[in-house]
Image 1 (tube, rainbow, N blue to C red):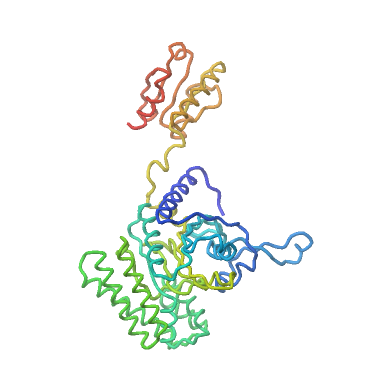
Image 2: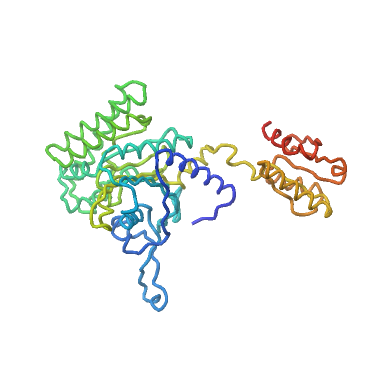
Length: 454
């Protein structure tokens, strides 16, 4: 959990503003929920590891010594959304498209781009089972990243039913599926040997584990062959790779009908995404598991080169709202991780100059106690003209005031002295070039706006 200094806040607000604008272009509406939920609302929704990372709030008053918890800080924005939909179902449209940008809390071990308090930028569509929903969410998340300046990201796509079919085809018993998925979800983090070890520790037979891991090795070879054979065009290349992976997946599944349905839904998502400009980023990845237990169908994750972890992810969770409502409501969502996006953009120097620029365009000086009112009025007039104006609050030596403006990277300083007052003028000093000139008091705003464009 961190403090954010002004420059940090400006970067965060810029990223949030871009993401929000993209989400709204797709017709998503804003939603906010409380930081605290009843603990029963959250427990059991995130799998075994998720339950351990929930920040619990001890009972208050005479109950505080019991060590029991009845409330908790929200772990994500999806479960609170499901609660809201169940509670306000009659007030929401048939297809509820919402975005939510708020902090969540996890008792996780901090690391690069991983914090205990962090913001998620979610988009969700509820009320439809159509794969058009997945395509729209993928397109919105992709467009947001492109507008922020990313180009080298990959949207990994898989399906929980295809995963279940794969595990059954590999001989993993149903009661071991959750444990197996938790291990497989770490394949890109701990590698093949690490996953094999964890599968053994979780009671999965060596034969089943080896068959699964060998399948993923074969897929890598298949992707490499398709990559070479499909030429240089990125979209054509990725389309060929996806087709080859889906074909091999069908072979591996054999007669498993559940897995086959998952593969067909994956085909539909890829086909619908073809109408958006995301083809070169979309990759079918049968190893993608995602640990949250509420996912029921398509699952997605955004990967960026040289980043441990993802920039975001999501999936379909058709049963989650039903836990609160008593009847299932189709739902699918995608979440972008604000903190990791900011970390990567900072390391790659991706922020536009204006985002990390000075907090003000102009600083107005105070030359004497008698001229405080004059400086206040000038600052007011310049702000009314659309300028961002800082006012030095004390009657210091001019050198100190100029040094203060330079330390804050404010490019222009307006000097109001006795001599300028007598002539009806102000002096404008450009700290970028060192030049200083006098202009009429009534022309100061225009002169400053023109100077800012040079």
